[in-house]
Length: 141
Image 1 (tube, rainbow, N blue to C red):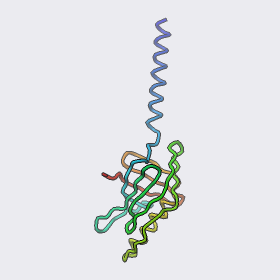
Image 2: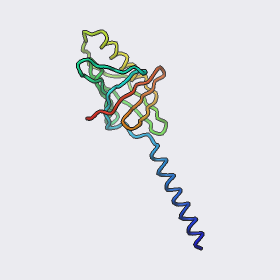
Image 3: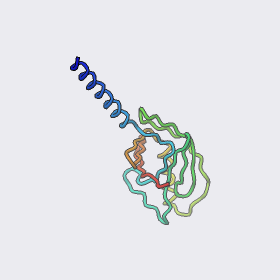
Image 4: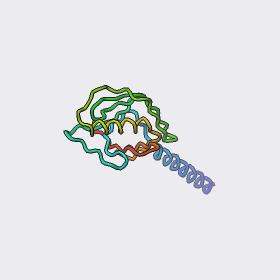
């Protein structure tokens, strides 16, 4: 009888540990998170004047700053498949005098709209597209 109880306890413990382990590898929700763009396709994003390129997720919507303009749109993230879909972005229409800033803004917004999947690893968010990768660090906000 004692062997049966011991074996049952060990099996229950193993199942409980397996269930906890499976949950910890599950992708965390993007909702309520805020990020700063760190790199596009392996190239670090360096901002003159201290203005960071940002991305925030809240209640099925995303928003951010892309260097010259603010943007927003809707997103859908599936935590089981790690897929990410972003709707066409709405953006303000400010013109920047710096061609490099405008080019980086276009690259950033285009990459976001081409998002296919995402991965959260602590304070790093990686968004993958068919053509490249965006890497973000968690914002202090």
